[in-house]
Image (cartoon, rainbow, N blue to C red; front, side):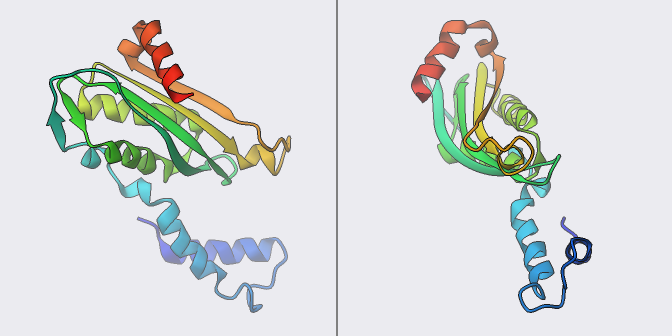
Length: 184
């Protein structure tokens, strides 16, 4: 749970630290706005992805399920700057599927935390393996990191790609290649 008062105090100190007048009109309500915004941006810290993956449906067909181009926004834990992009999620059911929106909700739960892209990718894959018990999972994330585009090396448009393979996707190159063809 976000401690609103601590966030407000921290924002005031930050503004003072960079030489701003925290009482001026444009900044007077900024600490409150930031505290409310953090509730939204970091709400995934209090969420359990398993809650979204509880309700499953029995299926006779165990072919690959792919949800691609799931837009997400997250925050780099190293610089507290945003990174954003698309997640592509695939799994091979073992008799059970989950509603498609639940895949996007799972991405959202983990994206709404301070993150590393590589960690985010693995957390999504692990949650699906744990709660759906599929034959395999493949998650690919493509993201632009503001810590690389607006500071430091300053390379706008560069994308970082991370992949997490679990189960049959680790063993079956042909299956992984099919996934990569499907998300193009």
